Length: 179
Image 1 (tube, one colour):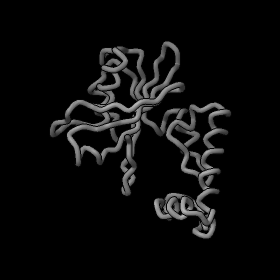
Image 2 (cartoon, rainbow, N blue to C red):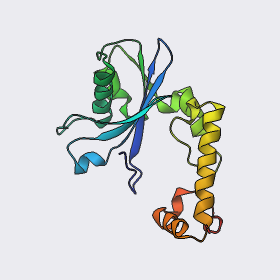
Image 3 (cartoon, rainbow, N blue to C red):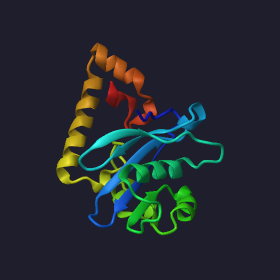
């Protein structure tokens, strides 16, 4: 399972299939490779979600590239298929351009799917695929988040443990709002 560590080392890449416009997102923890010789990542599409591991990593491997290679292996594509668009963290564009020269590589900050998440003015930390969600999916996500936050405010065993689990900086609200 993808775990978010205290340093916030979670990243994601997106792959857009130009034929039908479908999108896959892979979320991974870049710090995990320091502990293990592989990276386990969550692979999400509009209708499914699964956990996948990269092959064993070697010194010098670039984690997002290894994640992308594993996705291409899993979906049965070859690295040179030109109808894939990779939506990647800004600092990895050069690596993707070299590794997948026949594919389009787009910075996350430039891609429309990420624009809505970048303009977040709420106290919620929106998921990486927020810009691709339809209104029903957004409503469902917000309902879950509000329910979770409300349950944290309750003076119950679960509420106290949930407050202990989260750092104060995880929510863009005053400490008083969580108590």
